[in-house]
Length: 81
Image (cartoon, rainbow, N blue to C red; front, side, top):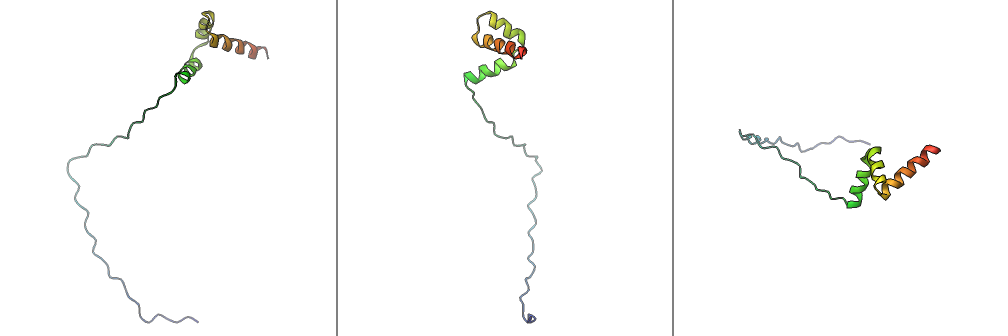
């Protein structure tokens, strides 16, 4: 059975404080903190090898670069498949 509420306390509205006035001087934009990253010399070399041109790879292989020689051999093997 439901009975009506006979006495209830009503909340009184609270006066809202006005926000503080903003200063007229514009604030400087805050820059995000900068992170620095260090990569190993092996990772730097791997990146360098991936972005070099085929002509550079051929020149390096002709000069005795073992990595360039392996890359040229791999590319030649891929072409025969």
